[in-house]
Image (tube, rainbow, N blue to C red):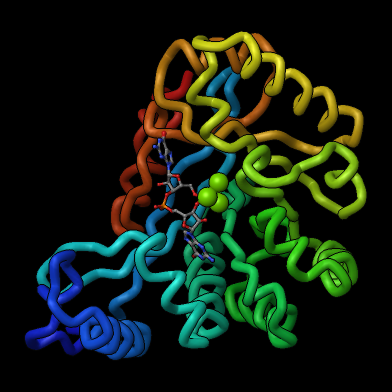
Amino acid sequence: QAKAGGRNGWRRYEPGMGDRAAARRVMERDLRRALGAGGLALHYQPIFRVRGGALVGFEALLRWRLPDGRTVPPAEFIPLAEEIGLMPEVGAWVLKEACATAAGWPAHLTVAVNVSPTQLRSAAFLAGVETALAGSGLPASRLELEITETAILENRETARDLLGRLRALGTMLALDDFGTGYSSLSFVHSFPLTRIKIDRSFVRELSETPQSTAIVRAVVGLARGLGIAVTAEGVETEAQRRLLAEEADLDIQGFLTGRPMAAEHLGAFLDAPGGRAAAA
Ligand code: C2E
Ligand code: MG
Ligand code: MG
Ligand code: MG
């Protein structure tokens, strides 16, 4: 598998290329092919309870694998996929793949899937979620959809209704990258969210500025008041982990406790006690 058709074009994605429009067309063609030919893959990053270090689940993160073995990060091709109208199809593939993989994990583990603004706008999105759940047998409660504030704001009229329907289906709903947008505290409680993910820009400053600790504390307090969960993203240092553990028994995700890994490494990771010990 995974011979996504690239015969010659790959080098042309690199910067410094003469004809940007032509390079874009090549990339567009190759992305369409990759979608149909096993060229996309999901990597999974583990998420742990900060106190005690129990593994709680994984976030699925999209990768585009080039035939030469390199991978293109999502920030470099998702905008293109959005632009050329390929995102509903890519998103449907991600949902199916993530649910199918998660269905093979121990039953207490969840999978988080990122949802883009155009997906949220698509009339077919809800049905796509239902199809992915039904096809995999994964209980809806083990699927968490990660949505950004921007995506909600861009679809304000439909978002509340759609999010309500997704909750009714039983899926969890996380607000991703919290703190990077307009995020007012009232925003959070006007949508049926089950989790806030604190953006890594705040986590990075923990232990450096007292303000960032205050922000984390405020978010944790808000979440507790609303009865929803909190994840801190981008935890890279032991000092950050310790400060978070002092605040609350929230969930942590970051390079300190585990990098995103290819699906083929999950089996060994889940079998190894190191999966849990890493965060304990
Ligand atoms: P995100 O949802 O906020 O995902 C977390 C990103 O932070 C991931 O980057 C992850 O690899 C990275 N990360 C995790 N821990 C650390 C850390 O300790 N330090 C640092 N510096 N980074 C860390 P990635 O995989 O490149 O994804 C970037 C963004 O692309 C994601 O941000 C998400 O917005 C988007 N994305 C990824 N997969 C999908 C997908 O399947 N669908 C959609 N619509 N968007 C996706
Ligand atoms: Mg995310
Ligand atoms: Mg995030
Ligand atoms: Mg992000």
